[in-house]
Length: 235
Ligand SMILES: *Cc1c(COP(=O)(O)O)cnc(C)c1O
Image 1 (cartoon, rainbow, N blue to C red):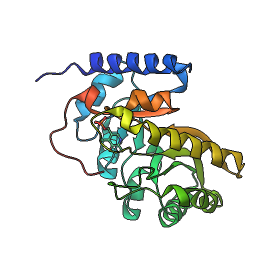
Image 2 (cartoon, helix red, strand yellow):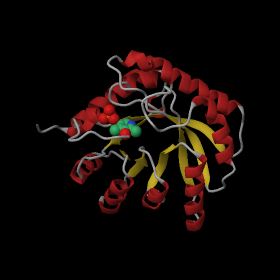
Image 3 (tube, protein in one colour):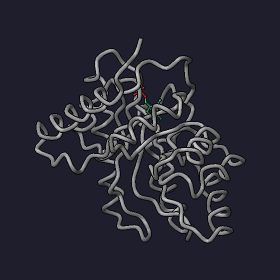
Image 4 (cartoon, rainbow, N blue to C red):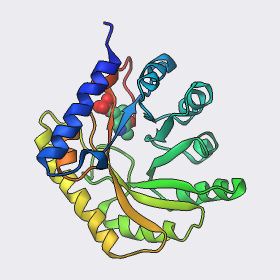
């Protein structure tokens, strides 16, 4: 089936605005990231030609290849799990690494960033729902991890990210999103040096409107824009 991805994107954009307005928020506070994983470069080019700037990838090598070949200066976000041996593909290419969930990974990014004389912008991935996904730090361990990572001079924490469970009714995830917002406020109130909590990356095709109502500042939407993916992705 031929999908009109530009029309889909505009439709999602409208829903983002409507959700923001329902919550009394300025839609400009919310960044829509088009999750282009598994999709061809031509899809990215089509959206980029329509002015779309923000794309999400979950495989570091795929991000690298797309970054290196795309014709416009679009931004790529590393949203999937990152192994230390793959850092080299995304550093200096990803505008934001959303999936930092251990000190070990943060230290490896620090090393690579220092070597290159750059600062890496990151989010801490929290496993708020405490289930299913293997990745993400637990809610209880998040503040300590933020403190530890804040001491690494070539990393800058901008906020939190979570992948909510896959549910039939997005309302089931409202509590997860609300708890994430609260956690981000709790960390913000600690006023930790070198840490800002301005970003809350949460919400996907099935639940981005609820996520926005609960405070998301970045939503990561794939299927609603690009159509179904050809194969199951393990995040
Ligand atoms: C694939 C993916 C998304 C997008 O999922 P959709 O349900 O297709 O919108 C968002 N975030 C992460 C981390 C993903 O891996």
